[in-house]
Amino acid sequence: MALSLINVFLLLLITPLDLSIAKKCIFTEKMQVHVMNKLPSDSPQLTIHCASKNDDLGYHSLAVDEDFNWSFCEAFADNTLFFCHFWWVQKIKDLRCLTTHVVVSLIR
Image (cartoon, rainbow, N blue to C red):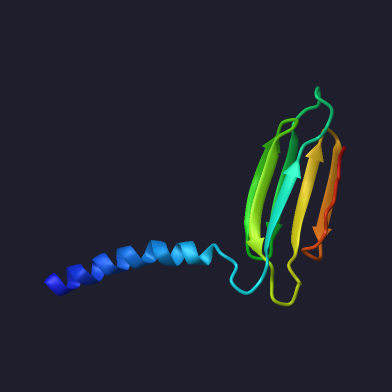
């Protein structure tokens, strides 16, 4: 019984350490992505939906000057693909980034 409690304690101790290591990029560069709403100050909210092959980041509504951001580790083959869909009033815009080294300003 005491041995199994020690195993559970070690598992609980190791798990958070393992998760913190998983958030760091060991062999590739860490990329930071920011989507900022820079529409005119009296504009309705900008709605976005961003995802990759592995991660759906969900739908977000951004007021003027709000920022939605995330980070990820670049793929070994430099083939990371994130895409975002933007909705504002009656306008829809899709953006597909085929490389992780792209800086794009969609709306000014």
